[in-house]
Length: 147
Image (tube, rainbow, N blue to C red):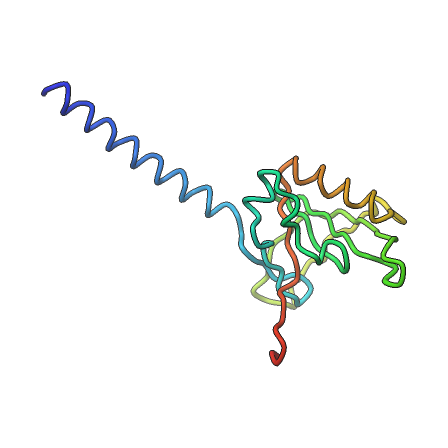
């Protein structure tokens, strides 16, 4: 076998390995999940956000609630005072999965991590978690006219 043939074969094998590993990586990230009868979806532009483009963080992270998830560890962040927009609470829980039979649900155990955080403190908390690899999940957006 010539050197050129060996190089081509090696490159072909490497491409197959790269394709397989990228498929496995994309399968590791859930793009949505059901939680408390609501659909939570992976934030748009999550890859860019994880690479440091924090300008793409969804507006839900400022005005409502969202979930940060890293493997099985989750953080639920909620704005508690909608009048001032300056009172966030953070709870942690372990992801226990979705259930086919709603009667067999096991509720996660929520633990308070922080309470009464300002918007600036919560923003710093979010940025730190993104640096650690947490992914943002927001409640599925409904368009006008959708029920």
